[in-house]
Length: 273
Length: 336
Image (cartoon, rainbow over all chains, first blue to last red; front, side, top):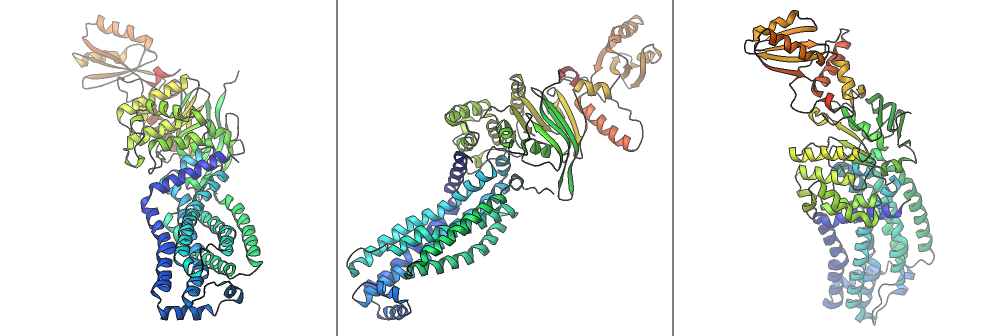
């Protein structure tokens, strides 16, 4: 396998994505809403406005948390504890939904898009192997979602530390569980999702069909990733490592199988018998 | 010694679902030659090109290119040595010209030579000034020129051109045809698909006429012309056209036909023309023109198609050149 060619495919796909403002502007807005606007509004409401009703509601919800999670909550006042719990435990969906949504949208169009634009013909006649094209496109689909998450995660960490930090005695975020979730649990779920989405993209006849089918595939994975991430954050001792390892194994198997879905004939949009 | 072949397609059949796209297709393309695949839309020309690069796997039969099997691990080597211009330019509209060409340069492994080659190739097709523009804003002709520049970036040994001049203005089309000539001069091989007879005229070393996914016939232009037009034709006119009727019974004249002021004569060979003209002069006939009618590729093509139709009806084909007194290069003249 020629990695130079693979990364060339990746770079070119990303360049096209950067040129497509109609695609990335909504994605940036999505990331901003999930990572900055909603957390900032909620945390400010809890810590600065001191809305007693909201605090009471969230505090009662915190009672439902596992003991391991409850033990981690910092802060002396109810406002501080509520804000800490919100920041650490209840925003896990943010880190899962955003990358999976963005990468699914990118991945769904990547192969069928080549076919629709007619550029699949160029790739089919090129020396790049189907494996190189597949992996190049996989990386190109993965990067936007993961980069958005990384940037969003940084912004989210800053907001949490600036808003909640003073209430709990200093900067505390990201916690060890968040690192574990971002670096160990989330990536394999992203890879599983993309391996399925790229397979769909190679097989369906139009981008619209790819996006619809990808949504169906991505939704259960998002729910699964969300539940596993929540478990990680709630502090089960060894489970995050096991869940991550199993997810990685499934991801690698799924990626390996996914290579077969990209063929030159599919890039051309013809099917031989 | 046998002629070295760059492409050797033998008995290839191809199906797309229930549709048979190729039927026992056999094409042999000698190294350093220009072979023109001629045929109507849907004849299988594009499918043939796709087989050559290994983009499609043959359903039946074998394909060898540079002595390698493009539908195997050797395919990468085959594709690396091929330059392809597909019927649609196949360019990335969101990227500019530079990025499109750099993408190809990187896939073909040009490394540090890339920028120099891009400048050279784009200048060759007169698209260098537009390389900074986004391709989505290019005209059809500009896109075709960029696609052509991309196809020669890596200096391929085999150039596969599928309708390369479609959408081009006449000046650019001539430049493309000139490039094709130059490439074979460098020892490279060209396979050109077209349904434009004028495009193939004067260019082809070998013509393959395709129809319904199979090759009806192939050969050099002169071979095919001799086969389909074994007799020479002359078009004569005179001040008093009826005076020419005397040729009807003259020795060496195989057939004579006159309509209005022009007479059409069939003879065995053009060597007979001086004697024929002398006999008319001796009879004090005022000849205004004597023009040998050399069948054009168009005549040839339609004679072949007509022959097929008649053969299907089990009738003997009577090929006849509609023939123009040729102002453009004729197939007979360009044959090497």
